[in-house]
Image (cartoon, rainbow, N blue to C red; front, side, top):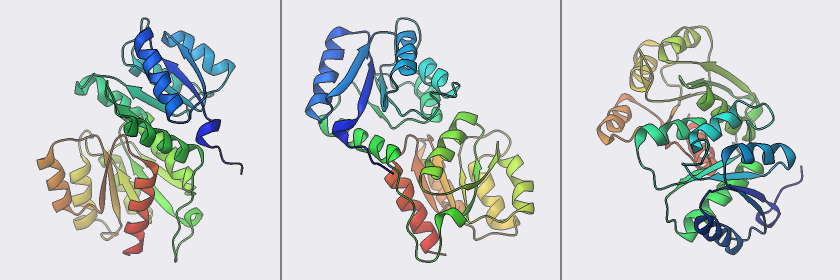
Length: 266
């Protein structure tokens, strides 16, 4: 498979402010990106994506016709655009605005203003998604692994599945919350579980406690991929027996390394 370099990436920027657009495009150019286009609103961006498919869409939060959250969810609902990498650049920090974008799966969320090294790191994470590398293990082949993904967000599950597929993992079972995961765990055995924290009825912590204390596969590795920021809650998850915790958004290299470490400890 042909791999794409940073210099070959084509970026679509969605930014209504001309000064902000000029600044971001200059930063992209300094980072090695020379192929880019800029539009000012969400609908123009969607039209451009269908005409000339970009390798990455970078958007601000507030557009004349929609928000960045509206844009990424429109992309995720479109069969032709749902796998396209997306990056948000915004000064918005409100949980209610940012979390839906985290859940939809992004390569990065950068502040305004951002540092050049933050942009470069995000661009390299995008490249890692475009040019995925399989998990390397001594005793396992990635295509033989069986994984349970538990998340009440359909868009989040789809994003996690895309990342796992890029790592060479093909056998993926889904559950839309902890309660739904319980009978699945009773009927099937898994090499590891990926779960969210915030879920209705049975959250990620309760699911881990069930797996460790009441299931027939109490030692299965569990990776939590979450936007939860409360350190006390995360400490309780660690106490419950989670094998690894990864933030949303996450870097593909980080997920790969966590999975390799979890399975190496079996």
